[in-house]
Image (cartoon, rainbow, N blue to C red; front, top):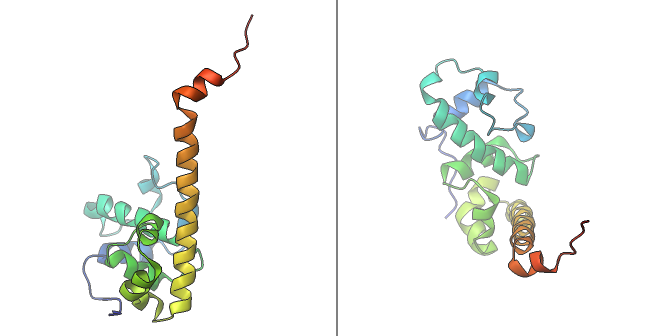
Length: 150
C-alpha cells in the first residue's frame, strides 16, 4: 500500500514554492505563531496564499521537529497525506503507520520505525506535561499548599 510523493500534486505546491524561495529558512527554530513572522520571508507570487502557506509551514515544522535530519520529500509526503504532527503519528499502531506511510521513507521500515518512535516520545512528553499542569490545578493541590504570610 505504499505510495510515492505526488510531486505534481497541487495541495502543497504553494508550500514547495515558498520553501524554494526561502532556502535558508531555519524553520525548526522559528516562532511561526508570532504576528510579524510572515514579513521575514520571500512571498513572490504567494501573497494571496500567505495564510494557507503559514498553516502548512507549521505542520511541516512539527514534522521536522520529530527528526530534524529528515528529508524534505518525506515531510512533504506526510503532509500531503494529511499527517502534520507527532500526536497523529503516535495515535496509530506502528504496523499501521508503516503500512500507510512507509512510502514516505522509501519503503525503509527501519527508518519509518525510528521516526514513529521519535513521534511517540514527543507524544509521551506532551502528555506528561499536560498531566502535570492539569494535576497542579486540582482542588486538593491548592488546599495542601503551605501558606506563608504575616
